[in-house]
Image (cartoon, rainbow, N blue to C red; front, side, top):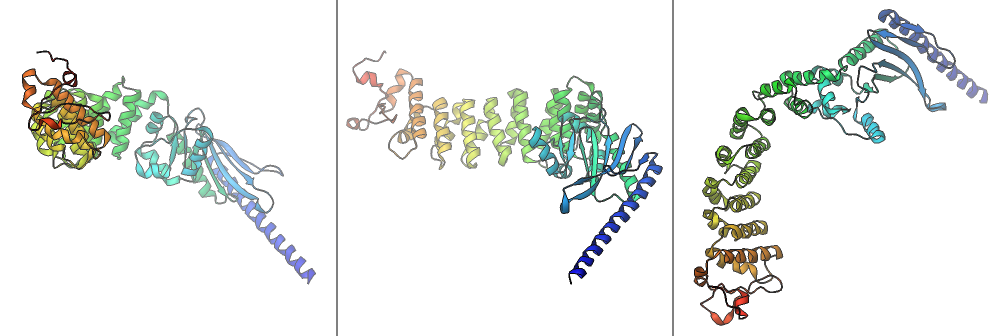
Length: 459
């Protein structure tokens, strides 16, 4: 029995060695054929080195060889191809599947470069100079990479491929080497070519986000080049609203205003893009020009309404006060808060009633904003609704403080003849609240505490 077991082991070993040498011999023949087809040199290996195919395809150095990983029973043979384009492909450019680039980043730092093409960015991870990488990764190059990832990787100026096994199939390997060489040619770029390549992306790329990011890269790094101005002019007519808005940021002037105005008015554009267009108009143009655009967006929903309210306040656009006042009560909480803040920033007394009504809102943030707005535009009419918010423990501390500050601000604006028209004695307690004197029911005055202490108020 022991002899039988030993014989079986020997037989298995002989079969394994036979298979190994059969694959090795087949691979040697295939590699010799690859060398003949591509005009490369085949070199036989020895005990310590594998067979190899080396030479040049055009300006590219090519090497096909084998290596091993592991030891003992875990030892495995791999075939690899390296296309050396150092000096032509940027050495800081790294492209590969997620895990590959993540390990590089962990060792050397850095962040992914997002091209804007979601299908590509989800599968490929790119690290390197952002403007150069976006310029390189035009639509054709991205498609080529997507077809070969995760097989091909790029790092240190090389396009690299590896597979487990001996590397058989002459036609397959020859085609693989040619594809890698073509890819390395596509990744070649000189710094002087970056603006033109970015401009080409803006003109022709099928992905809107790539067109937009290419324009932004031009503006950030090459704003003084003619390619930047030309890209902006082209992008002002882009079918994508976000790209048109990016072009407006770059172009400026009447064309920028008209493009942004059209984005704000475009109901098919994403709400976030329309909101950014409102912010752009309010930031770059005066109230006379931007105000009507902003006012026209009041009453919209979500981020558009939020941006419109903020922009109206930023511009101090008084003609928007009636519209803001009518929307304050019905708007959702975050929009209502911005509307009330805008009324205070504008400073028009016609917004007082809306701010007074906002004191009754369920949200304390809205009520605090209303009190602060009344500190700016409130009159005697606002004191009575403010007073309950200055006393007791129910109003939050911030709200009590804001209401008390509003009453003080209103009092400071009253002329001496107006102070007897309201019956409030301002007595600030230690917690900042206001209290009313109980012995003067039916009559209060806006007396200063100093006067109550015996100091005569100046006439």
